[in-house]
Image 1 (cartoon, rainbow, N blue to C red):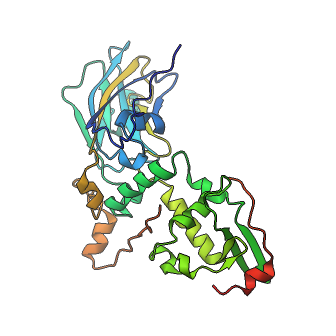
Image 2: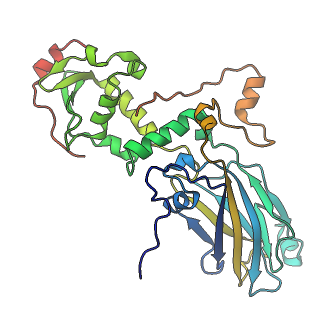
Image 3: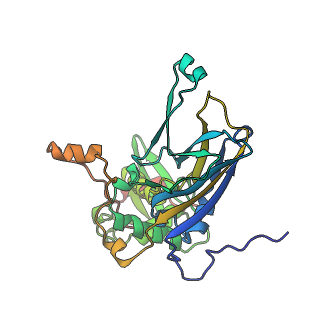
Length: 334
């Protein structure tokens, strides 16, 4: 059996301009109460190459129906890498005799499926995740392009692989030597990251721009604190802010009557409403707030407290380190 084509495999296309991503999910709650649309499947469905370009603003449940159980009732909860950033919920009150006797009468869910079709679509607005609120939308979009162009298939864990960077110690002092040749097939992402920022005055306050680097036998010397700081920035750049980046989108069936799952099957038809990339997206200064929802950050602003906004420096394994000795490294002025 041949594999289905990868519909995102279009040369030079970052965003296919899809506004409504149609999904259909079938659950068999008594055997498996959840189904997950994996991160790479979401990328293909949305027609983008980076998780931060999915830009999902709403989940619309067009229909949720149970077959095989004429009186079945089932709650549906949607989640991503964690609880979704939404204020939407439906409260189901279980007023059956057994539920009343045990004191458990209500549950909050995102949608409710019965044997009848939904009377109308259910719209679940999504606000930005905590990670998305911590950075400007334009920077998040640009970083997604950098990942798609330079770091496709790499994760934050890749920043911990830097065997080509040699560590030198003298007492409590530590310094690294980073190879100057970032074009080597053995060059780590860390080495390439420093190369990409050699002309960036905002990277570590311009301390390691090309003309300021101290060369040592095919490499240049970096203080340990600066090396670790740069590595953390690289990790952050390699970590998408989307709430669906790590685990994807999960649909979970919740028993609502007497704590028992319906023996029938649950069929869910839904759409992910997204905002395709535009020129304005590159220039946006801040992520939109939750729809009709007061956030902690907004409340602090009203109280006159300063909110610390994290700003990422725009920047864009295995191998052999630069051959040098510690005497040369610690003699270098940095």
